[in-house]
Image (tube, rainbow, N blue to C red):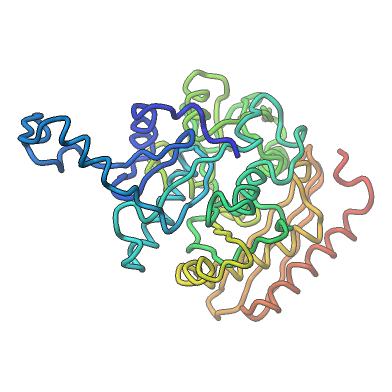
Length: 381
């Protein structure tokens, strides 16, 4: 397991915390193999802050040596980006709120793991393997016992799970829509012909070009949210699209120019959903995760992922899917496949009971329909 080497100082950690706008009290973060407790200096007594200690330094050192280091009850594995950390801390906070034994200092530890997708930023995702780019190393750490649970963005999780792992928990879903961000235009429709939009998503690219063929898409527009916004400010592109859910979790919605409707931009499968995995033989962790699970979200994600699995979707395939509960408490599913250049778009819908088995069948059936309609060579455009 490789930890995030760039966060080797407390200054690096503080910059992450400030960029994501999240309080870091309680728990700890494991960086390069050791654990840094997180606390607020202001919370310390004045005598300590001013270093007016009545205990001689040597005696203090002896006292510190006598204390046994606290063993974390749960080690949470996560990527090191500000958004990934925001999701890990959201998970931690929910666990602490629901289980008193986890609210104690040091009971939960955050373990940062660098994934293949984090290491290779110069190539399009499709060119470096597609599936599992942001989960493989975290899954390995889970299987090897280096962490107890793994927090993922569900849209990064392949439709198959590694052996010895389960994913029994989805937190309540955030807003699934995409946000339009530009310094010069209020919407996609307002961009002049030839304007460049940055996105690493073939799903977004194909839907943009289908509606606005006069625009240009810069495909390898990768990096975390902060990196993409910096590139936008530097004029590399005239606009970009980002998941609104991530901007909300980072408290960065002030950057949003406008929000695209579901009709204008169907979201990625499982967009806005957080998934939490554990080992299949770890009943204790499974019980903790069961207490966090949001069943309505879990069922919607299962429907969408059944659709994706049937299409055998990857980062090379423009696929969108969204399941939600309608006013009659039924499931409404919408699915889409497109050619990469946006010239061909196929859509379908399904409606049925909001129940696991029914929704999985709906997702699979919708996928089979679009596969049949697309025919061979559809995704080669």
